[in-house]
Image 1: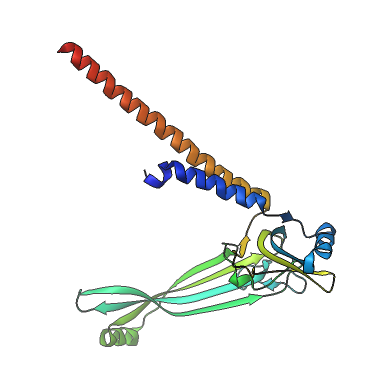
Image 2 (image 1 turned 30 degrees about the horizontal axis):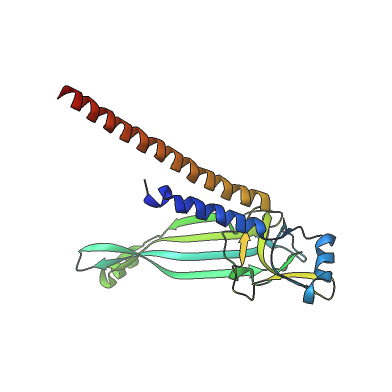
Amino acid sequence: MSDHLLNPLAVIYKRQEIQKLKEIPNFQPDHHLLRILNASSNKRLHYVAVEGLVQATGEPISSQFVPRCHGVIQKITVHEHWKYWNSVLKTWVSKKVNEQQTTNTVEVSVRVDSPLEASGDYLEQVHKRLRQAKEGLMDAVVRELSGEKPVEREEREELLRVGSALTAFGELVLEQDKIMRLQPPRDGRSYVLIPSDYKSFIQRHENSANMWKGLMALFGITAFTLVAGFIHGALNQDKKN
């Protein structure tokens, strides 16, 4: 069992982290938030959490591989798996080559600036496929001469899907008295997109903290039992002597 899981300071730190998360103002993208922004200084909230459902203001992006699957951010990655002959090790060594990545975005109803700069696993993998490389006679000859050969081709598609829940942490500004725009914070705080509603996100952190607390309690009971057993054995040994 890892020492950091049993460190009381780790449990305290986790609780403090959750408390800081709860102190971040949380809003729905509605008229109430619009009124708050209008009344705020410079029509700006420096760090907030905004949660809602992902919707495209224009035409959403269609998946290239999955029918009737749409999103507002799309990332397609394609690369080939090759093997190279290592004359020192006398074996074939795997390597990824010819990687190609395409990213497409459209604006969403709550405008999120530079979403690709945000951290968080908010893209859902909707497609993955491995294709074995076909090799003919000429390919085999080239392979022997060059010391390299293709093995397989991998393609993967990820989407931020329309209709999915999303919570964004960042700086919120109001433009033209009606357009709310979330952007990376200028004060250096984290810009984060979470594929979840705010309540579920906090609940997962609290469950994690409770697990750490339970491990601490279990470790304490185990340690007490071992010490008690040691003392009991020592006393019995003294009585026999």
